[in-house]
Length: 227
Image (tube, rainbow, N blue to C red; front, top):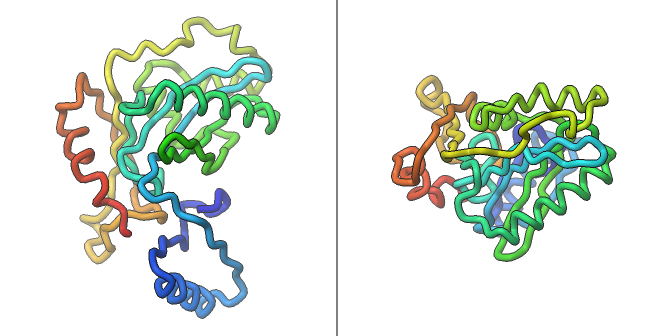
């Protein structure tokens, strides 16, 4: 989805030409003044949320979260695992390199969130958000670090070297699990896709991946995409 479309509103995944034709006709019928964007979909790609803070010199990695559901499910509706559970060191190094280059290019001072899609050995940038996103409170809870406080102070001119103990000391896995309002709106389709449907999230701290909060969504992760 384009980064300027909040919540993935009006987005769809078209597998066949006929589906694309039908969606475009519907779109132009209801909003004839609107433009639309057709983008290539990365099938079976892994999505990653990468939160960091940049002070103009140093990059602090707040957290790297690997989504269980494939790319195409809105990030707000995805179950995310901190730290990543299956990404190689090379992929993580590549994302960190990209993160630093993007932060420098955007002249960021403070938070920078980048969403990546991993397809095989290739790393794609989905979007960059020079702000605190919804995952910062999750990361702060999981790590015990006051990421919001650190980020705001960097925005106001502090350096990351002013802070002690920024290294991650996670002795567990943390899972961000979305909360959906389907019990309040039973008529709403429960298939997940580019449009965000969740209204909140919960956090679970796990010792291993035998926990049902990881095992159950992992077993059914490929069924969540509406296409």
